[in-house]
Length: 262
Image (cartoon, rainbow, N blue to C red; front, side, top):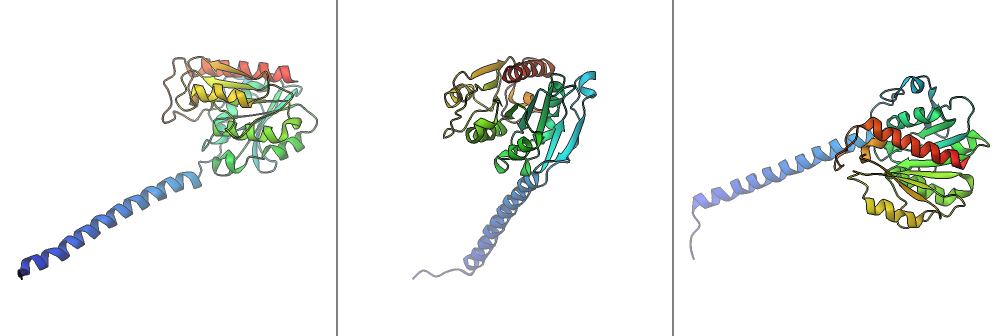
């Protein structure tokens, strides 16, 4: 039987200590990453009204308030007589004030916009937030809409409450594969031409699950992140038009659609 040297006996415990040290380091790195990701989701940035939301003099004079209607919601009042209400669900992990610019731009056309603050900024956790808003605004045509994940959840809401709505606007979004919206009104789906997040085929294919007569409107040169003012988004495309040009296209499509529904 071959003997075991004293040196080899000393080496093995050292190897084990090194292995455990590496394992501990890996665990600590993973834990730190998990804490960082979790904190970014659970601790949301401050909600600030009016920040990076004004496009021109007219939009600067629009009244915007933070109210409690079934939870916090940004209320963008219409300028002059109210013609319609637009409830807009924010994109996933996007603060609702990123869409305040849109409400301000639509206000001049008599459109009152409500942007609910979702739990942890995830519309999937507040899919029925429109209930309280619809009850609050009274007898007025209501159009629901949303961006990205918010649009998917808005479509889900519309599939359950089509009779309470006058229309639906999807921005870089489409209804889930198991959700079909049956309604007496057509919807409009806005697609950013250079979108790197919501695939064109998915947006176009989503028409099959929307009411008859629904259409897709392409925003020339725009990217996924141009629907909200929250900065660039990982995986998105490269725009070929200035943001201001894309925003004008977006406003024109939405305000024309809503006008036809009221």
